[in-house]
Structures are given as C-alpha cells and as structure tokens.
Image (cartoon, rainbow, N blue to C red; front, side):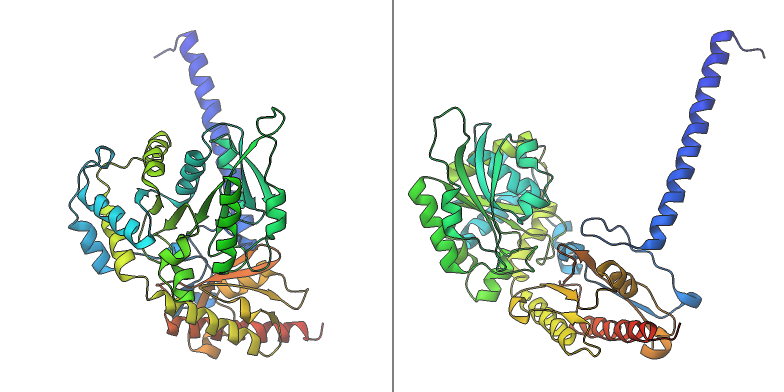
Length: 430
C-alpha cells in the first residue's frame, strides 16, 4: 500500500523522534552506569540502594541509617489503617482524622490542629497563614530545614521574603542578632514587613540538637515585644521532648504554631500535624486546599498517625541510646579515624567527620554500603550500612524504629572493619 505525501512526512517525523528518544535513553543509561560506579551519596539524593556483592555474597545484613523517614508500618499499624473509619475530610467528616487532630491539639497544648500530607507543606502553610501579604518577611536560621531543604517554597509559592540569622552549633541563634533583623520601617514602601520568626527543634543540620527551653522562652518574649509570631518546625520535636524528659506542650508553649512530623521517628507512613490557635487553623485549612493538600478519605493514614502519637513516643529513647552507642564506638575505634562531639549527640541524629583528609565522606559511605572483599570471612556475614555524606564535609547517620540494638552492633562491626581495611590499604607498599 502506497503512502500519501503527508503520511510519508508524518512517518518520517515519528521515526526520527523514536530514534532520537532511543539515543537519549542510551545516553541516560550510560550516565547512570557511570554515576552508579562512583556511589556518591548525598542527603535527599538517595534512591533504592543497589550494591555489588563480591562473589555473589549470600549472607548480607542491611542497616539503613540514611534517615528516619525510611521506617515502615508494622502489623499493628497496618491493621489500624485497614480498620479505620473514614469520611470526606475536606468536608470535615472523616472521624479518624478528627480524632487525630483532637489528640494532637491536646498533646501539644494548642487550641486546634490540622492533618497535612507532609512536613514541607505544613511549614509552607504556616508561613502563608502568618504572612498573608506578599512581600512580608520571616526570620529564619541560615541552616534551618525551611531555608535549605524546602526549595525556597516560601518565596516561590507564598511570596514571602526570608532574612537569616547565623545558626550556632547548638541550633540556636544570637538573640541580639535576631532582634537586629526585625524591621521597624513599615509602612515605608522600600522595605518588607517583619511578620514571623521560625525555629527548628530538633535541629537537623546541627545533628539533632535540642533547643534549650530558656532560648525558646527568650525568642517568644522577643517576638511578643515586637508583635511577631513564632513558628516551630518541630518535625522531630517529640525527640526533643523525650530527650528533655518533658511533655511536648512544655516545649511548644513557647511557639504560636508548630509542625510535627508523624512519618519520621514515630513511624507513620505519611503525614504531619500543624497546630496552633483556632483562627490560625481555619486559615491553614484554606491554604492546605490551595496547595492540593485536601486528601478526602485519609482516615486510613490518620489511623497510623494516632498510633504514632499514642504508642511510639516513649520508644524514641531507644533510638537516642543506639545513636550514642555508635558515637562512642567511633571515638573508641582504633585507628583513630573519626571525630565526634559526644555532648552534641542528644537525640537520634549523629553527625561525625573523618580525621584523615585522604578519606572523604562519600568514599567512606561507599565502603560502608558495599560488601567488601574478605568481609564475610572476617565478620561471618556481609553487612551493608547506609549513611549519607552530609553538610559541612561530614557524615550523617539516623536511628529509627527499624534499627535495633543488634543492628547498631552490626554497624559498629562494619565501621571497625572499614577503618582497619582502609588503614591496611594506606600503608600497603606501592
């Protein structure tokens, strides 16, 4: 059958597109193959781990310390989800979500609470509800999660400007510097209007540091003095509460609003709670809807959140203990390859660095994440420990409900093996 001229032209165009796509896929696959060999791991750039095993090693244990976001719901949580009573949450008719929000508000000492899909959305909603005019300004730490890891969404989507204060080693900032950042020029048309101060507790980049209650009290007093609101990014505030031995309301009383993540150490698969005054939550509902966060019959997810808040808080002590156990092992390791400040290991996040400049964090993480030659013979099995090369040329490891005391000991064994093998290679005659 002969083709008409237009058909021949279309066929030629489509064939060219298929060939181009095939070449593009070939190029992409080649790039992936090259990148896969380097195994350079970075925070928020880790996919499903796939590692080579020398000689097809059969006995391999995996210890995933990349983040406490990798937790998976257990049988009790899955059962609660499957049996959850649901309704249309956008219409306020999901009883399980309503119960979760009441539980959270009471636990946090707030008037009301809202279930949202993620911590990033929760923080963005808070910024939008506090800073209702485009061009308003918030004051944040220069190393806080909102400023570093949330894609600049406050500016991108909410039209809110940020000014920063220097984050100190313990996650706090200097109060004099903070006060100097508050603008007093409104309504001068040249300047934005200061509206909000944001704090992060525990502080991620600083290694899970717990903000002192006295600092939070002073920040709140400063905010009240100048008519500003205080929002706490409390993604891991339950870790802070456990570390201080106080109920979360003791911490959150110093913030007007707070975001609390359910899907990190608390083990739920999805969701965060945004809490604050009733009027604020009413505005937050509108912002959530605008951002596409209305989830309809999401009681299935809220059931997991209820279990997290009611049953999973106390066990965070285990994560803190395991993190400190590993940190102590780093200090005691021979050769003396690691640098860690034990006083800074307060919760479930551990940041440490390498003393030997010839071994960089990416290479160390790669060694920890693969089964090395001779490892099974030395350790009785292969052990893959996943960590992240991190901010400031450091390494981050995070403990969670998926990591037991036994897993922590396996990670210590692997760390010692990697250190000894590296030392042997370094001193091997060339």
